[in-house]
Image: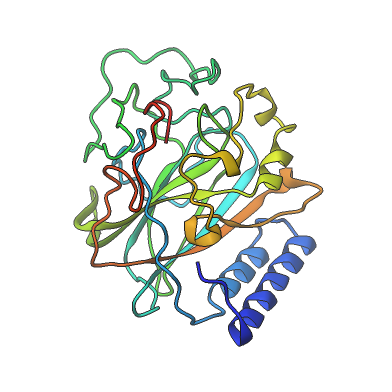
Length: 301
């Protein structure tokens, strides 16, 4: 997003200092640190540039699983994502909108696609292969990046939440691993105009499809820690990723809070997404402003 100066920049820096102080005094993902993160994210009323649109990728499944903790049985470094959605035109929070995430586990494997592996010969599926064809998800899936047919009914590291009155959602998950062809990332969608129902989320449209990225120093710090240390797939660095636009937070680069000496204690990643709630961005086809990546679709996004 936009780099802030003057009073707005001072407020943001003060908020960042409060976040670091809270993380030093207690668990990096504790309540105090989360409160400080939200305060920092809310500190400025300055407008932001539109967050970059990205392709949906091959591993999206429209399960509409409403939950804060998406971890299930996955192991890894605790990660709390504090995400905020605002209207890029009015700078006001997007209330009662749905924010969805999905990402791979420490071995680089996505739920729903465990038989695909991570493209590097790793990522052993948990347990025996499922019998029979997978159950079709409620809304199917498939968008830019060459959507793949699911291989199983597993659902870990996938979830959706409705934004609160300040536009925030919070997810508890684990730090993602890596797979062939991509830097470490988390996928996201923002849905507006619909409503939560007994069966999931109904109506409305997708106004933003994006991806979140992690600073290289944080990813390197995970490499020697189990279970990431067992992932022998060659890792693509952020500066070599075929989709990251290199524009910092506007391009999806998360702001991270963690103990730099002990990242295994947990990480908070936070970011404000400035979106156009009237637009439709399903993540089909190439991202705006450039051609689709030339790499093969599996695993590519």
